[in-house]
Length: 375
Image (cartoon, rainbow, N blue to C red):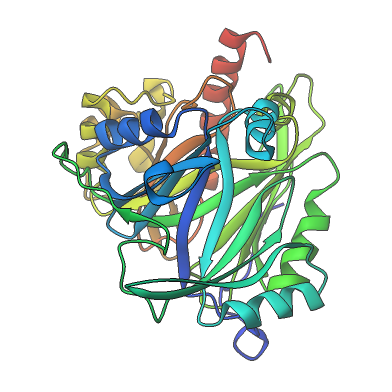
């Protein structure tokens, strides 16, 4: 059954590792230049920074794009036989780094390792003419890593070693604001292990829990627990598959990603109708639910500000909790493998994750799985 606790309940005196927000999300991809162009063209990101042969790197190339508080980094290897190349060969394009903005990257690293984290790299200071950044890193589920970023003494475009990326091609943004949450898929039986890891290592608290009775259809099911840091700015739902008649979306992800990893990145907007309209006009495809979903929408969620006919046309879902309501929609997967996708979300007071939409959404995902022959 769903259980809910107040996000900041009993966390103030235990928040030993304050995290100020998501600093950046780095994807390992086969072609960083093309990936960056896609996210600029389709999602309205703008050029921010670049690192590669021209900046002294010999083994990789990175393009950084930005929209409001969201920074995405796309990185590709320049030679065969590299660790990065092996990662892409195994997992396909996907999220490697979830970078966390902290006041003190050395303290964060030392505390995390002391509490059981496996080191990715020890604290290092990176400098250029714009100042210095301290970074450190730890492993989390699968081969995903968290990098702590301390940038209070830096005024450059992104990080030392990157140069500003100037581009005459700059599509209009679509209204994306910040990362609302980031969802990880883990293997059967591993969810509680990683819940405990986030509690012990980073001081997160479980704020929400869904079992297979909450998240199930006729054929598939999954379980999920939502972890949040002390100030509520970082939220990581963690999913694992549950027994069902057919292969769940989590099983499909694990099969194609070949292990645990980031399933989707949820990005916030203040006007989801505008954002989704723009994204659809630029070629982004979304998971859609039957139009009958909207026949009883007002009965289920009450009065809302947005025209239901417009939400129906765009396929936007709505759910309400005790704090307000939210609107959300999910893209289809964005790479060759049926793994990672994006969620667009607008919160109008609601602090939950759309429980009322689970059945309709997962039935829609099952229809996509059936088309792929993986259900």
